[in-house]
Image 1: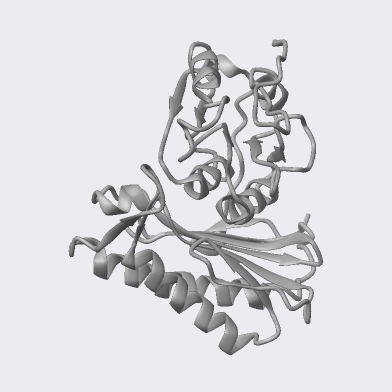
Image 2 (image 1 turned 30 degrees about the vertical axis):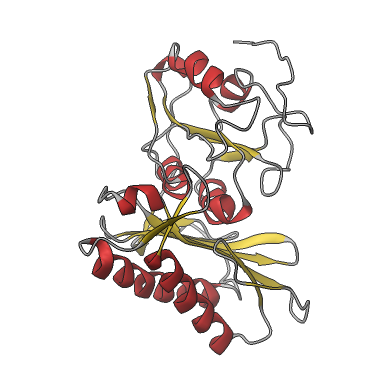
Length: 283
């Protein structure tokens, strides 16, 4: 029996374009990796390097040249919303800047493509590891080639799960630091990891290396591409309350689907004022 393949998407050429510019930005990162790039601070923990800025300039210039009517929103300040087009590019030019600045090879570029309010394409590229994760909505998720589809894991219980999380730059400015969540989950899970790149964490959920990921106080550019990877690889993505406010809502849970509710039930969600909302745990 021949399996039916999904009909080609009109957005696939845009994802191919994103793959090309992600590789170009990756070369900029690798060229600067051993040169001790100039580092400045947005805050005590949030760093920005000249390489972040160079990658963003390159990506935005390529988008503007190829698609002059497209909107875009990037971490280091590039933004245009003229609403001439249903498309908006959501760009994190260097996710994992602290890792990069310290020579730790866990960093990436994340390019999300939003179409009429929904994420239609996503690319996460880790240049040091030479791993290109990409997805087009309705077409599946892939690693390095369309001949290598990726899928979430089949782990179905927290004690057997390898999970990932992170901690916000505003760790000393928010009542909910995620530390209590980390302790609670880590006591039960097989292992908990903290990479320092949310985009890579999500990609690793998509390809089954991790069984789940959660974090709070993230921005759209941190999660747009990776969340689509997870969904196209068969996983589930929600906010901490189980809803759809994960892109702009400050909390995200992404899993293989099998451990989703068990993980989500162990996380204290945020109230609008940033304080912890008391929440009971379930098995």
